[in-house]
Length: 480
Image (cartoon, rainbow, N blue to C red; front, top):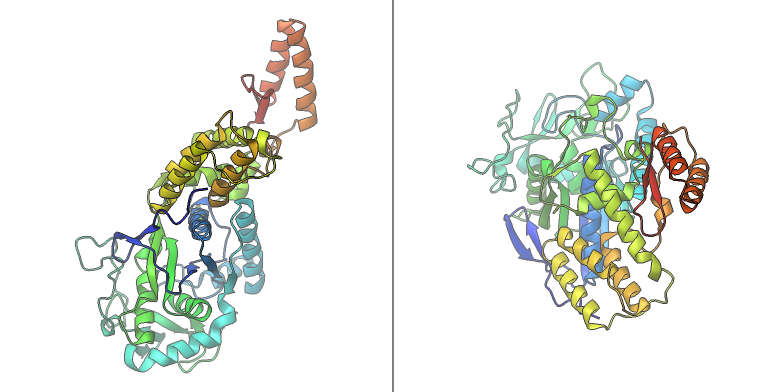
């Protein structure tokens, strides 16, 4: 089989805006931290693109032979309704609106997020780090940098960004390339300065608050990730991931804290990697839009969640990806074809691929994934391997297993029938559909095409799309 080390792994580092060879801090290991959700609401599918990307990165690192330690945090305190320094704490606001305990709010939405992680076949990280479990360490971190790098206002402790070298270089602040600007906030020495600790305003009581040297209150959002990444991975670690929106404020602020704590210019992570946005032209990606787009809505409309994973893989993680229902339907069709092509070798005894055609495909696959996770090319190579004829079944299964372990589409586990998801609004059952299809096949066998057409019309009226050209027997899907 192809030597997986043949192609050096090259990744795009947002800090330098360039492709760089991945060389781990600790030989043979890869330590990765991913900014996780703020659990005040359900994650939308744009949020989940970040975790499909981080999972693909982790799978690639495992495939390349590294011992992976992946951390994803759960933010249950400190994240304001504005990513800079304005607004209310998102969890406190959600708890007040729903008249529920903030702890119950966090538990409910954390479990909803974990359900989406499972549905998208995202591997479990080594650690789920919960922000409120690390508050004592956050206070100690802040205490260590307060004298040299912070100042106190009535509202809390703030970081002075002029005390570290080249603040904002990740976001290209202050240059023509800068993607964001930070609005001034009264009382701060500079607009870019940010809260390390927020005091509870006089006369108010928060559900989540702790005593600190700067008064009773709660940590700033940026502080959490610096503390948890250092505690679980150590500084420096290899890769920090997140959505491209984090590149503008959150991650520059993390880097500033890390520089202050290490008393150096070290950013904490060697690589900072960011996935681009998922866009939806109708605006339903926003959580303020009511029935916003989340994984459960895709399932309710009859789409298997792995179709969304494949849709993400069809675009490079650094490219903007547009969501549409037609596009999701096309991804589901592509996934079905892959599953159908893999079905004949699913039960074969796995064998190491030695056939030249397979080893060449695997070498190309390795080169694609080593080229900054080029999943669009890797997918076409997976399809080429799945469609290959007159080849040893065990070797073919072995090659598909290698590729699918990286892409995470479950091709050798799931079957085509499992990809059918009954829409929540459907009134016809799968048993009824299969019974009508059986009668229709009998009518066609008897050349009673009028009866066959009538039965097809009945299915269409019930929202069932019948695919007569399916080579393995008629397939169907229910329209939502």
